[in-house]
Length: 151
Image (tube, rainbow, N blue to C red; front, side):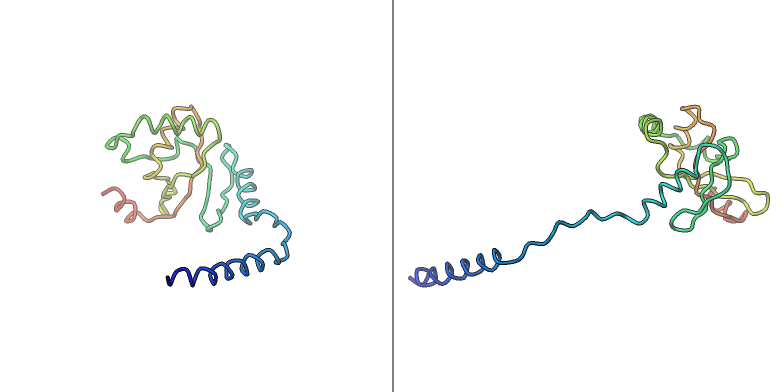
């Protein structure tokens, strides 16, 4: 009984809401948003050719550099085994669209040598493809920092 008395009230409330919604002026379609970082990324990709060159900073002010694979020491390469299916998938991806995420390397402040600890699958994929260089995110390090990474 109570529901039948409330039903006309609900219907009138819904119809009043529907009229307000229909009476709203339509807004013009918005242009799609463009990320401000896109032009920077395109410029960065143009500057980061496969040839070794001068260093560049990424959007987080990290040093990016294209290095020769032979310049990068891989101290853990003999002890860690890569997932070969993952390496093959990465090699296919790199061959189609290029390397999207640089590997991380440490550069010793004493002699300037480069040491790679992350990006082992990407590194091996580059080797399989016969590429001579790879994009790297370089971080300066002391011998003590290098020692900590080797533990």
